[in-house]
Image (cartoon, rainbow, N blue to C red; front, side, top):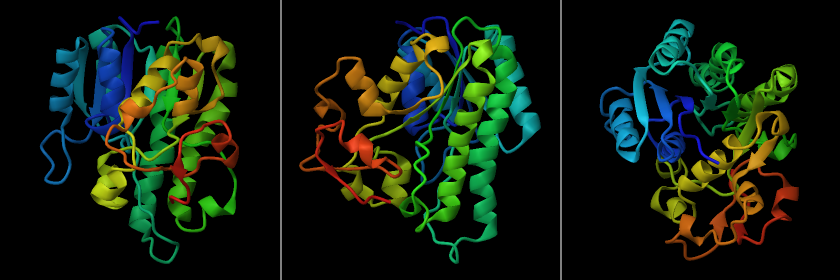
Length: 289
């Protein structure tokens, strides 16, 4: 299946997993809006909306770079309107933007708490809400949110309850909206990695080069997302997908290309339910998060 001619609206996306998803779609000839805050180079983070747009165009897609803080409703509405004006509609909404801080209750200041909930939960709700009227007009519409399965165990909350609440809030959008818009044929799903992914967050917050060496490349999430987005929307909704399991369903058996420099077990990601580990023979170091 191909995403040729499809229009993707991606929150965030100037780097990391969001950019990898954009580039995978671009290779099919898709249209991609990168709606993110980074318009000028960041001293500690790679990429801007403009460098991302250049990469998308070079990969074979069409790109629209829009400065957009998804905490601001007017900016989201404007970004969606610009996308529809440029490409004629929206087929796919990717909720990629997210904020993280792995601190306990007493160490989490309310400014950071508010940031995580405004970007993660509220931002996902707002971006989805704004795109859905246009998705209703699409032939195979999808909302895909990068959030974890709702595995309600205390171990996922005890060390960083504020962050977990914000990420699970994204997943609750999937749970509710998948049922709400099933009659409209809109697929609403979440996607989460089995392992840590080599992104700026992993390198800057979770262990630097050591953790990066135990992580997979963002391209595994991009390939899994592509597989999901290529499926019939009426038959693919309300799921909390895990990247490796999606690709195994697609016939992939060799995952070494996604972590070519790994010398030992990979780090299992946050929030992965115990039952998932029974479905893979990948060597994993558990306890991350």
